[in-house]
Image (cartoon, rainbow, N blue to C red; front, side, top):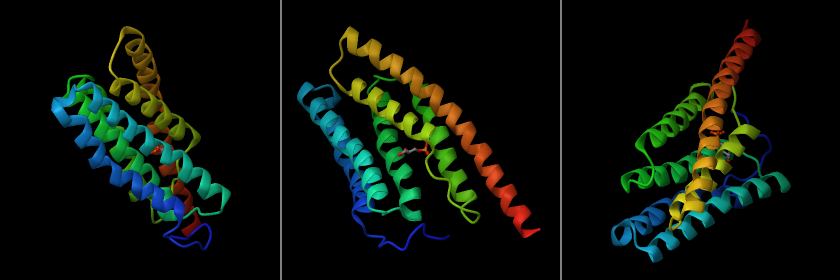
Length: 192
Ligand SMILES: O=P(O)(O)OC[C@H](O)CO
């Protein structure tokens, strides 16, 4: 595996990625505090989720701006996103806010893409695509809206965005499968 540039592994972008992972248990504790439906705790959970999600934006921006892109970051950043969104989806399904089938469809895609990345890692890294980034953004917005105390307007917007996120989740998942097979085939041709 080759580094895009010789940069220290422990740089600010990677530290932010790891901080996002570390916030997952804190987020879950606040989501389930006081039974899961206490308005104050739900707002705290929303705040922690929002801060953690924002680190995704900052670490990517810093990595690009200051040349802090590492193979570790390319792999760890999507995993940190999946840990955060996955735990939120499971939490919302446990609380009966979100149907389990939505959580399961997204979880299967996210775990599948992660396994796919490791499966082809000897040939190269599959970084997040624009579609993958847009998918994560839509998931984050929909989850954020479901975390808020609900009313009709919030619920309608949350469902519309979740539907778009689901479509993009599936479409980009298929796109990554195609990319993985192309990467593997290219590596095979290079060896032959
Ligand atoms: O769709 P993925 O697996 O590439 O994930 C995208 C990342 O969450 C973007 O930061």
